[in-house]
Length: 372
Image 1: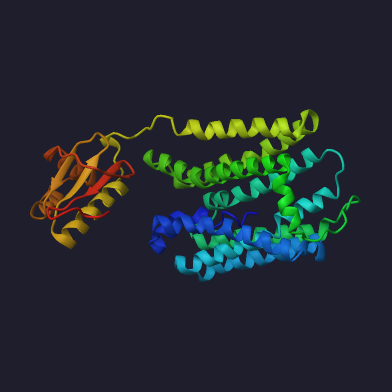
Image 2: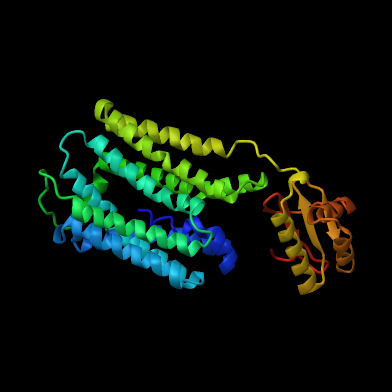
């Protein structure tokens, strides 16, 4: 499952190399989820888990996913090819996780909570692995993605060689559309599915966003970028311990109770994190990247329409810089931050703003509004 976030983990490098927009970067992650859904439906409709041995299906799809992931590293040079390759990666992963659950179920009649906890914990560690590879691996993102593909191949071969079906194998079952209606008519199953949907929404949002949050936070402190990658691995990967512990407790006190408490605590954490105070929001902590972006907006506005661009700090103070004064101001400033502060001190203009790091960027025109 390390293939899942292999693309998302290298988004900062892709953003620079491919000049990715925020939307394209999001699609690199979303496409994997969509591919997984499509692959799961195709697998169910084709009844693949009952036609093909679970071990063989696991190995074949793990290696196929690794090949597609390697193609992403070797041949993708823009989002136009990268996004379809990430979709295919997710589609092949649909042949890894469900068969693994089926194999596990054949080995345990009792104590399945602990067994499932170990399996889901392994999944969690796998999904966190690309960030660890980024932190301690090569500076070239393509090498890191290729290494993740090797991990997937190794995992597939381990299952093929060392894992077999257990003594409690279940009889083959055909896909039946009627069961879909029965699932929604059953209150218990319906509630469980809705709860799982909400949990997955929250979980994957956290898994996707926490690396960006950690990178942004540590960049303000001028920390080593590798530290952010390792921290992302630890935050995501620590869920593996929670899976095993929860599984052990569930076998003793009941799965429903443990699941309900776990989702309530996890959801509360997601709500609370948005209320935590921000640090480094004052004008003394303006990052060079944010200032550069502000200057890019100013240059763009002046170059395209000869108008007025506005750069506004979090404090609300702003500075208007006209085209005939911008060059002189920039040359006179000792640094990019000093230049930005000088503009802020020149005027106190307020306007609707668009947030961008520690700065809020709001391009305006003397001849109408410039769309950001």
